[in-house]
Image 1 (tube, rainbow, N blue to C red):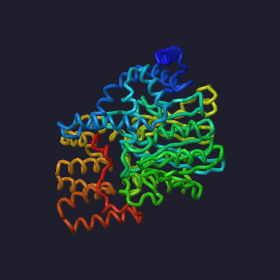
Image 2 (image 1 turned 180 degrees about the vertical axis):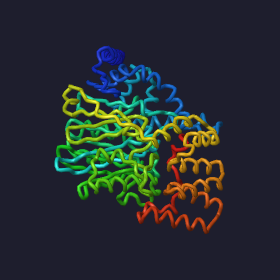
Image 3 (image 1 turned 135 degrees about the horizontal axis):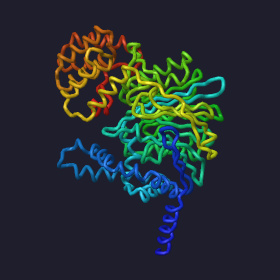
Length: 511
């Protein structure tokens, strides 16, 4: 036993000294290349990113505190123990080789293993809102994906990483990810398999079932075609709702696998395209809560743009509000204030951008998969646009108010920034904040002003409906519901008489 333990320590130490990994910069983006055994990959990761990971310790503590913060203070020690137990239980489902990677990161970065596990399981407990599509062209299939993800008190925009994994077993693969994760949020392997996932609100519990991010990692490492992807998905039980969008570049095939409650439904290309956001389209949706309004709006908008044959690059930057036809910089548009990554894959070519701001304002890089997988890692800065005046104003409000606890202070900042030049987001934010402090009449007056100025949309109508329900103003409520139905159209998920939650859960941390 002693000899075996000594050998393990010896090989880990040797791996720490001679771990195979490199770090590159392409424009403002960091690219890691990690090769070898799971331990070597982890040791390289931790060693190359040690300074950056060291800075994240306090942020991880804050996220953990938020996970148990709403519990009555006397119960928090118990909740903390239970929560840690759930993380430990879930870690037993992760393949051993990926746990070894995390142990390697932990050894060389001085981060605790339980904190690394917590970061990689966040997707199971948080609620990102993302969009993806695959569209057929004359030259093959094009994949597009916007990752919309917000975590309270954590700016994900400056934690983006592109990681090239070169394991001793299986395929090489690229993970578009974040600092501290050894899992992909979007990925592509050397055999041309592309995979991403969008969370679907469901009754499933995040601490039950196989962790989806590690399932994506398995798919990239061990799948060579779309049939093998399907086999891996069907073999692993996932309890929460997830949409996996999969593209096989070489086979020219694509599918969305809707997964929930350990069931799997497959959707293929229809009329030359497929779209996925944050709700199920198959009969898996039966019995589930209606989806976020933003999911339905993004789904229909992407579908509309694809049918009009709009170029995929422009689809990822689209900001139209389908309920008004005007520009919307809030989360309901395809590209919005929560979009932290945009990825376009067209055969061998990849366009990537990431950050805390809107897509056009970011530095884009273009590279080929062939270069990355052959070891000649190189890419070019593709383009950088400029924020519109509307985007600048809203970004300034978010930046100025994000650390304020007082709603009255937020309202003052909002009025100071927008002054006499008001846009849709001004009215939405102001009406919502006034509703929270129970200034219902003032909120209704703001909504009326928005309507007079041509800015009335379904978000504002939803706020109005919530207020009218509280005030029991039945006649006005009936009129507002009728107006909402007229604005929404006939889609089943647009029936907001049944919707209980008006906002995505992370809004409260921004407004």
